Length: 117
Length: 111
Image (cartoon, rainbow over all chains, first blue to last red; front, side, top):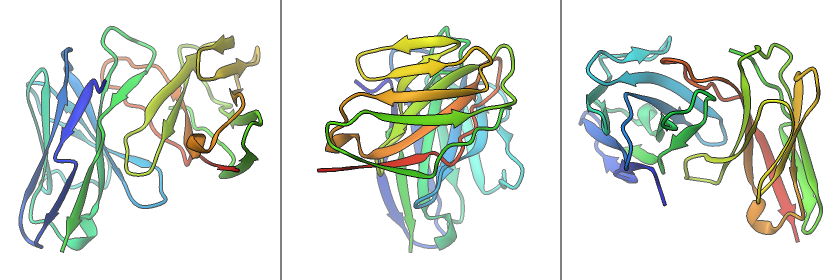
């Protein structure tokens, strides 16, 4: 079964509204989670690293005021796309490191498809 | 972070063995090699991981030469359901170090 769960799996919203995507680690604690974005026929692009209890670390070119990340607990990280526009339409995927691993293995969520009209 | 290079796409018939090679010339001593599979509209799924020599699980085998500058994912007797994108990633999680995805290899299995 899934060890990292995302919600919602898909969402459609109007331009200018904000959308929140949740990423939960199931049965394990994740002090760090990673958020990726994937456009059609392209690879996953790392957006930011979510750190429990502290500010997220954003990759170059990712607007931190537009993509708000909150990691308020050891099992939940949220990504809020603020004032969404059609170009924000994408597949958003979160991941968490395998507990106790130092080999880089990640568990991935099912992904959340955002469509902005 | 070590950069990886894979073929963009591959085609195979059902029942054949498929080998996908990944180059990672700048792999660091502490880096592991991990392969993921991704179906459309789904998150990547772990396939196999290794550090050196050969690793085998119920799904695939991973061959890593002594210099570790490349690796080969071997899928025995592929089926239509193996049609997916396969990503080779190199790294070792330490602190907040994320894994960076390359372009991946799009495998198409034909009946």
